[in-house]
Amino acid sequence: MQAQLEMRIRRFYQALGEVRTTGTSSIQPRVEVVGNRVNYTLDFSGGASDAKLANVAGQLIENIACLRDYLNAWCKKNGKPIIGDAIINSNLDVAIIHDLWNLDKHFELDRPPRCRLNLELRDIHRGAHLTTQAKAGSFMAIGIDPHTGQPVAIGDGKVELIVDADVMEKAGKRIGGLLEIAERAITVWEKAFTDVGVVLPAR
Image 1 (spheres, rainbow, N blue to C red):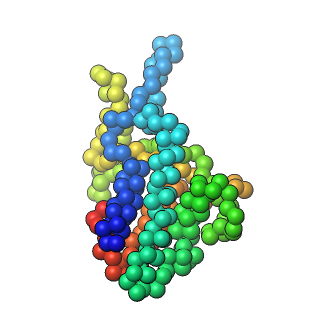
Image 2 (spheres, rainbow, N blue to C red):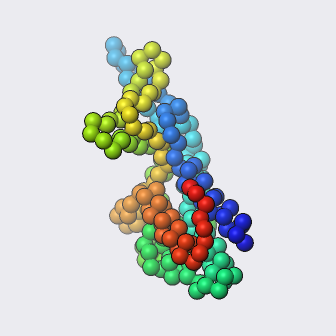
Image 3 (tube, rainbow, N blue to C red):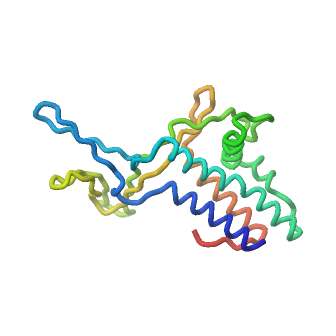
């Protein structure tokens, strides 16, 4: 049981890692000559199709949502209160991830959503996220090497390409970004596992 549980947790850490790609190597420059001007635009998709990006997002959702069953199985085996559903019902981020998983599996829900919202994912995409260091004067940008025409990182921070999506109510209200919701949900599940005595593998 411990080995299976540890592998499941490693899988959801791996799914979280698949969402992030560090560096500029997969950024594709696009060049357009207009009169005497040369316009550069940057494509952050890395050549990934819409289906590929949707799969990355879907795997993250699935690997987080199925932790309920593993937590419940651990609790049952070790004589602990079975708490998986209580966690879903008490935390909005966890409930959103669970509902998105059920929507992906079943297309439509046959019971009220746990988060009490009619959700959908929109605009699954990969975009650049630039992070500076936590010190005065730190900066980060993406530029174009004039000799190669390729994107380069400029500064002392970090460039990540992140697969993300908008979590929306079907009526049109944006609830938040998928990645930020997923990361908060992961923190809740990590605490739940440690509270019942599970030693988590390192991220």
